[in-house]
Amino acid sequence: MKVMYLAIAVLALASSLASAYDPSPLQDFCVAVNGTKDGVFVNGKFCKDPKLVKAEDFFRHVEAGNTSNPLGAQVTPVFVDQLAGLNTLGISLARIDFAAKGLNPPHTHPRGTEILFVVEGSLYVGFVSSNQDGNRLFTKVLNKGDVFVFPIGLIHFQLNVGYGNAVAIAGLSSQNAGTITIADALFDANPPISSQLLSKAFQVDKKVIDYLQKQSWYGNN
Ligand SMILES: *[C@@H]1O[C@H](CO)[C@@H](O)[C@H](O)[C@H]1NC(C)=O
Ligand SMILES: *[C@@H]1O[C@H](CO)[C@@H](O)[C@H](O)[C@H]1NC(C)=O
Image 1 (cartoon, rainbow, N blue to C red):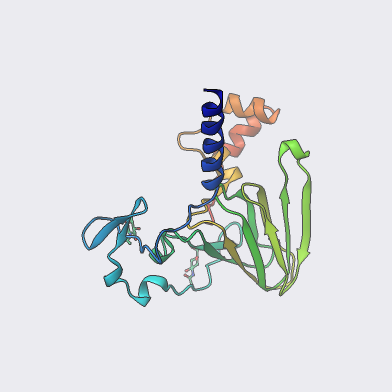
Image 2: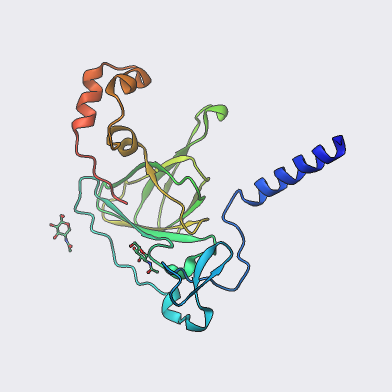
């Protein structure tokens, strides 16, 4: 009996390890469709009938984002919602455009590690490790051609510290890495989080929280 419990525990651990990231595909491709029309049910998803799949299903053109916004930065995601051919492939990307002094504010991707390549300009980037690691800040100034990694789930940011515009491409280890912008999630939640609660959490006067909750939080991705 004990051996059986152990076997079950080991199996449970193995399956949780196997599903820690996007599951591996069981077919060449599974172009996402929203319904069963012209589709088949494969590997837990509705996929376009492979016979109807075209090169266009794997293609998308990405223009520069409009950085005329309060942050001076715009993220253009190419996740599975923008490119149906990414479905089940465990990967995606985003293009990030920065005006001078533009900021991609502190945020996390709950389901993806990010690898960032600087195409143009200079960025001050960083991430903060977990409480258990002492909330250590890791930063670097990146120039054209530099690459930096933001481990899955950790809070990170990118600030343009060059004189002109900057452009970066972020690869993500999920077809749908998700984005949580810290300030927006806390101070612009819908419905709002109680200001008493946030006042206690941040250990500041409730007026400070009321002020923060009144701001119009621009979401740049
Ligand atoms: C599925 O529906 C969503 C939301 O209506 C839409 O954004 C997306 O483009 C649709 N995807 C496909 C492959 O039709
Ligand atoms: C960029 O955004 C600003 C502010 O919303 C808008 O006025 C402007 O027309 C946009 N530019 C382009 C090229 O779309």
